[in-house]
Length: 439
Image 1 (tube, helix red, strand yellow):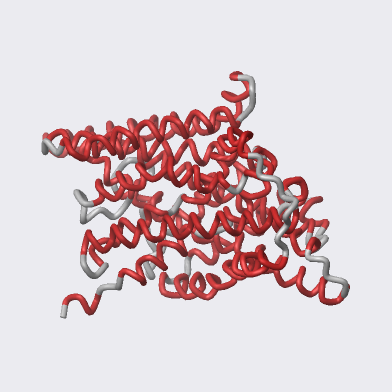
Image 2 (image 1 turned 90 degrees about the horizontal axis):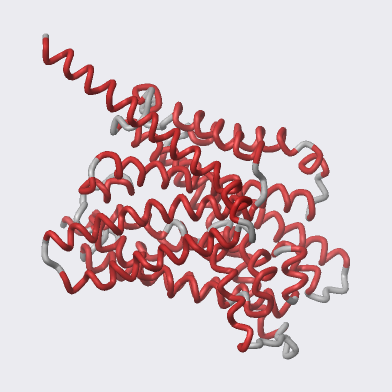
C-alpha cells in the first residue's frame, strides 16, 4: 500500500531527464563547434565519462542523508562553515546559469525574429523578463508544475526533429579527423553545462519504488540516455550545417540548411522551431529561477545569511517571495555587467564544481569513519575529475592568468561577501543565545 504513493523507475528516469535537458543543448553546440570543429560532438561523451565518478559520488552521499531538503545538506558532516560554502557556491553557480539562458533567449529573438528592441535595449529587455519570471514564481507549486510540464514537450521537438533528419542529411564529406581528437578537451566546459541538474533526483530517493537501488538505476539511466541524445543531436547538426556554420550562427539557424525551396514553408518552420527554442530558454531559466530561489530561502532558514528572517519568509501558498525578488535583482546586476556566455558558463561551472567538491570530501570522510575502503577509490577519482574540470574551466577563460582571474573574480567576490554575511549572522546568533542564557 505504501508503494502506491511512490513513482516507478521509468517515471523517475523521465523526471530526471526533464530536469537535465534544458537550454544547454541549444546553447552548447555552437560554442563547442567553435572549439572542437567536426569532433565537437564527442565533447558530450568525454564529459559524461569524466563526470560519471562525480555523479556516482553524489548518489552515494545522498544515501547517508535521506531527510535532506537541499543539496548543501550533504556537507553537514564537515561543519557549518563548509556547509555554507557548499550551499552558497551551489546557489551562485545556478545564479549565473539563468543569465546564460537569458542571453541565449535574446539572441534567438534578435537573430531569428528580428526584434531589434532586444539588441538595442538589452538592459530593459532583461528587466522585463526578470520581472516576468518573478511574478510567475509566486504562483502555487502545483500551478508552476503544470506550466513546466506543459512546456516540456516543446523543448524536445527540435531535438527529435534533428535526430529524425540525420539519415536524410547525412554528409559523407564531414571529416572526422581522429588524430586531432585532443581539441575535444576544449569543449568540456560547455558540455558540462548540459549535465547540471542530474543531482535534483537525489532528493526524491524516498519517493521511488524500490528505494535506493531503483533510484540509482533511474539517475544513471537518465544520465547516460541524455548523453546519447545530446551526442546524436549535436552530430546531426554538424551533418546539416557543418561545424563552421554551427559555430557562427548557432542551433536556431539549422532550418536554413535544410535546402527547403518554398519560402513559405521555410519561414513557417523557422518561426515554429525558433519559437520552441525561445520557449525552451525561457522555461529553463524559469525552472532554475524557482529551484534556486528555494535553495536561497533554505540557506536563510538554516540561519546562514543576514536578514535570514526576511529572506526565509514565504507567502500564504508557500512561495519564497522575498528570495525571488532578491534573486531577480542579483540576476539583473550580473547581466548589467557580464553578458558573455563563455565567462558566465565558466563562473557557473566553477561555482557548482566547488559545491560538488565539498560534497565529495563529505562522502570521503563518511566512508573513512565507516571503514568503507572499497568505495573510496571511486570517491578519489571523483575528486580528481572535479579538479580536471576546474582546470579546463580556468583554461577556457583565456591564455592570460590575470585576465582569467578578472573574469572569475565576480564569483570569488560573491563567495567572500557570503562568508562575511555568514560570520556576521553566526556571531549575532551567538550573542543572542548568550543574552537569553544570562536572563
